[in-house]
Image (tube, one colour):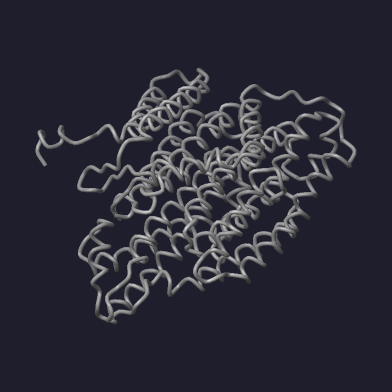
Length: 504
């Protein structure tokens, strides 16, 4: 490709990515030359400003028609825009948590690294949402994964942080190898890595042996991606990593990284395995053949996540199992393959972003004040800070799916999604209701500690400014989305045609 061709490409559609990349590179250079005694917290504010600039840039392209560059390897469509808003919005809130994060041990020497590694992880997630090629999808995935491995173990002198990073690297490496192996079969069958090219090639697939290999690749890619989003039975790394990682990193993994994982699942599984082969290979897409297996996995994930969470005493570990359960809810929406699948998944991820990050803001503050991450550390919070206790209660009720909150509307959309699909899924809908009821027990355990248990000390709690900003935004969004859900869904409805055709 010559210089003239490069200059003629519409690089403007990559403006949000260029902003994040440029600031990450700038911070890495500044960190080398700044004196060690200087506080690196300014890096956090620069990163936060960069994320806001990327959001503004993306907002300016909302009405831009579908565009692609670099031989359709990078694609800006309604799908990419919708999920990038979640990624950027969640990252902005997590960055505010990171700025105020003051652990008692093990982060001062790596404070600068924390912020630009965070930006590179975000960049990888954004690339995944706009990728139109298996190679760029994989590069984005690895950029996110490798940065996340380092962030999880960035407290070098903290034993649990080291353990979490090691388990994360081992499980992440295995899942990456399995995913790549499955993608290699797809490339071998089609001779291309471009998603549009793969769709065209597979639509004419006639050899039953090729269909068998395609089914094998589906299973390997599904297993590999299940590791990434902590879907049972490939969830075992999540509790240890969530517990050992710094709290802002845990919040990032539970929201931003999980969103990126589902972006990858939707992009790859729908575009590659949602194609109807020719008559010789069968009359239905492989994804429909595997639908019942996806439903079973979703049910198992909901049961395991909610039941094991009942026995947890560490709040970050409990939220890890809660996150596994929520991944099961989202998988129900995907496995149903109904006409409202995009609405249900996107809305749930938006609702989960605010209610989960708000809860982690409170968890971070309480763990720093009390010096413990045990649920008992929340005892008597209402007497020490009534506002903080009420705010946490709102997030807990939303996560549990109580009416009037964003979490309730999110679960309701998924429940409806299970019934409007071609094959009504009564059993998995029943499991979803039952496991949601089970979740009340461990969520209400936190409320019991806050409102009905005596405080170990009566010291009043002062809320830091950055934490207060996160709490105000998250509470407002959780309530508004619960009362007026169309404030979020209108975007999808206005771009319905783009969503229906995002694979074309």
